[in-house]
Amino acid sequence: MKRRKFIKKTSLLSIGLGITNDAFSNIHKEAINLNKDALPVVIATWDVKLATKVAFATLINGGTVLDAIENGCKIEEANEKGQSVGKGGLPDRNGNVTLDACIMNSKGDCGSVIFLKNIKHAISLARKVMEDTPHVMLSGVGAEEFGYSMGFKKENLLTEASKKAWEKWKKTSKYNSIINIENHDTIGMLAIDSDGNISGGCTTSGLAYKMHGRVGDSPIIGSGLYVDNEIGGAVATGLGEEVVKTVGSFLIVELMRQGHNPQQACEMAIKRIVNKPNSNYKNFQVGYIALNKNGDTGCYSIQKGFSMTKYQSYKNVNITSDSYLIS
Image 1 (spheres, rainbow, N blue to C red):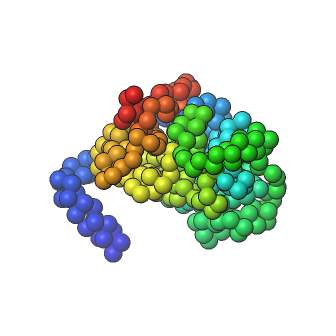
Image 2: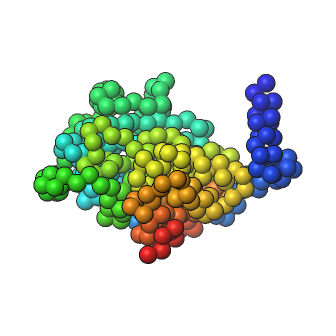
Image 3: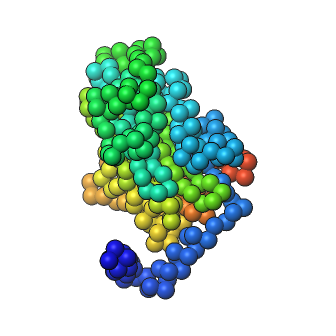
C-alpha cells in the first residue's frame, strides 16, 4: 500500500512538472549512479577549513559519515573566537547565549535541540536526541536537563569578548540582522562517504541580540538542514526567518530530485526568496550549500561575501560563492 501511494504521488508530481514517467526514472537512476572517484566529500558553510579537515579525516580513518559531521561541527562550537556558534556566541538582547542545532543521518533519522543554554556542543546533544530518545526535538530547560543526564558538562558560554560586544550593543539597542557577520555565522555541514551515504548537521548561536526565546531555521529539519540519501542534502545560513518561510533546504533537495544539479537548485531556492512579494532581500543575507549523491556540490547566496569550504580528492579549499546581488 505504501509503495502504491508513493508511485501515485511521484507520478502526479511528474505530470505537474512536465516530466514523463520514463524521464523521472532516468533522473532517479542518474542520481544513484555513484561516481566513486569523487567520494568522499565534505562541504560546509563559510571558511572553516579546520572543521572540514577534521570531518574528512574522520571519514578516511574509518568513522561513519555521521561521526564526521559531529566531529567537524564540534570544532566550530569550541572556537571561542567565532561569535556565532557554540561557546563565545553573541547573546540575545538579555545577555543569554542560546544555541540551536540539528543533525540528520542517511536513514532519515534526525535530532534537534532548541534554545539550549550552558552546553557547548549542541550538535552532539542533537545526536543524542536522535539516537537515545523517541523524539526529534527537545527545547530549553528540557534539552539542557537531558544533556546533563547524558553526561554533558555545564559551562558559561558567554565569553568576555561577546559580553563586551553585547554591552556596546545595549547603548543603541538596534535590532537588525548583521549581514555576513565576520563572514561566518551558522555552520552547516554535509558529507558523503565512499559508499554514498550522506549525513548533515547545522549549529548556531542564532541571530545576535535576538529577542529572548527566538529560534531560527538552524534546528528545524527541512529549513536549516535536509538530507535524502537517495538524492542529496542541503543546509542554510543567514537570516533564518527567511529560510523558514520557503523551507529552503527541503526545497533544494526536491529540486535536485527533479533533475537539477546542486548549483542550479541553490540558485533557484535563493530566487524563491528574492521573488516573494514585498521581499526585503537587499537588507539580509541567506546562503545555501548543497551536495548530491554523485558528490557534485553547489553554493549560492543573496549578498556577496558568502563562501563554502569543500574537502574533496584530498584538497581542502574555500570557494567564494556567486550571489544574486553582485554589488
